[in-house]
Length: 337
Image 1 (tube, one colour):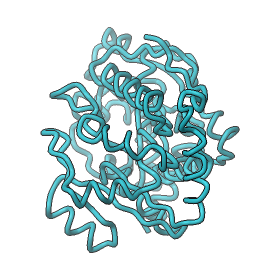
Image 2 (cartoon, one colour):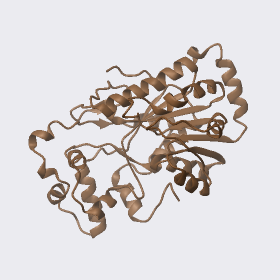
Image 3 (tube, rainbow, N blue to C red):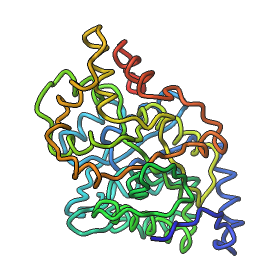
Image 4 (cartoon, rainbow, N blue to C red):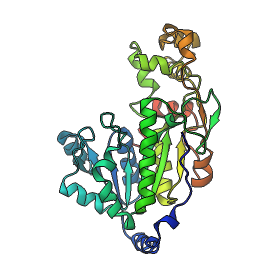
């Protein structure tokens, strides 16, 4: 696989680039309007963060009418969108999309169709509104890097992902980049590690104390797993929205790519008030049930986050899982408060 370039593509837009700059400059004085495809855990966190931190108007999509009603009650203008069947937005939803200045997609590639559902359903609408769009973001995964045998990777590293999900992500990134080149949509790609936060962390896994799934057990074999607290994910995305740099790719991970076993052991220590035995934690995570041969087949890499710090001025609130779990254990609901 070849690394997608993240060079500026402003020259590609010409001769419409000047019009885009003029429209976006005038729009800077108006309220910012964000439209989020996929108001799941991360999308809802971003919506909460934006609504609290500035005078943003936020709209987005969900799968069901019940979820829509709940979101509307919380002050988020929601519209139904089914990415599995490519059932697009209603006319009212399209109108809300086209009135937005910032577009974020958190929806993964459609497994059945092996394509990006947002672009398949509404790529034409995004192209039409490119001249007035200030920022567009696509949430991808660090899984696109594949196996590096524990070596460090950054945004310029070769994409070695071979799994179906990784290949689909690489294809989706390419589709969003093509949209930028062809239509001038100011695309930014974000490669996220494992996302955790309130209600979705190793603390919840430790409390459950159930038998781990095969995927959980396999992940437990990894010596390095990149992750990031959802609050820091929101802060990075927000910083990028305020400093658009179309064509850029950013890793969103913390400073400490630690194993799942170590993280769960730390969570158990918080819950019990005692140091957890590491070997016992490994057994409880199901690692001992996996053959040694299988462990050599697990992807190993460490993902750098230097770019978000240097380019966006981000200082992580939760530089490792320790600070993140400490905060959640203390009762913080950030960024959902």
